[in-house]
Image (cartoon, rainbow, N blue to C red; front, side, top):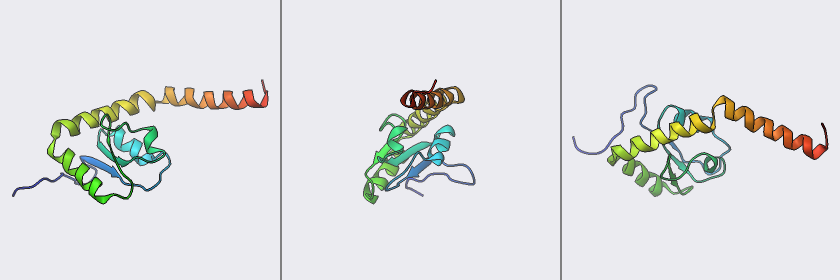
Length: 120
């Protein structure tokens, strides 16, 4: 049988697609990246804060099903690209979204709020 396909069974997937028209910071996206999955997502708020096009995922235009299909075919045909995007996605999560970094980011938010209210 010829053609391109992805193996998907149970919790095993090769590619995670998030073709949202709008999005906050998607926990499912972060989880897929933490599981070393190749990411295809729309370039919308929230997603743009985490995904860097052609580094740790691929961006598609919101509402463009042809763009989505072409991105899926692109990563299906290129195992090296798929694996590189997945590893970079994982590295993004482990470097930028680990507990230490998240505590620092939350502390910075509180510090900025306290500074605005002149609270010490």
